[in-house]
Length: 163
Image (tube, rainbow, N blue to C red; front, side, top):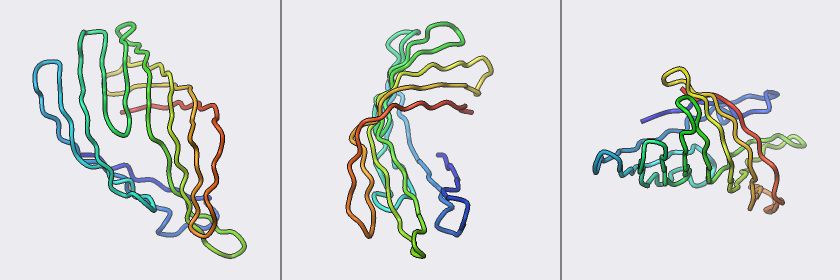
């Protein structure tokens, strides 16, 4: 179970719609020492499709290889050294926004698919640094009061920490 509170705003006007509480509740079943089955729900706190299934398999075929075949984010990880891992990610991405244009509020959402290569440094237990680079494709903006806009592919770079 996890909750990730956040503020999605342009910071000009902040109201209750800008504060969101995405959450997840997943259960894993240990089939054996290297295979886990996962299932549950993911609450996105977006405009549409608020509740998504979280389902998949986690498998460690060897000490060096780790596979997370999960919806909406899957990873294939190779432990290159004790502190370093290299991985491939495929995920469904996106978020929702509220903008004020010409005195009116409008909600819109951004959706895409992403493929990335990543590098993770895990020197401190339960504290990882990572950098990911790849491509976002099938990108769309969907507005409440306007049409849908399709966007081309783009380069994606993401860095951060997980704890």
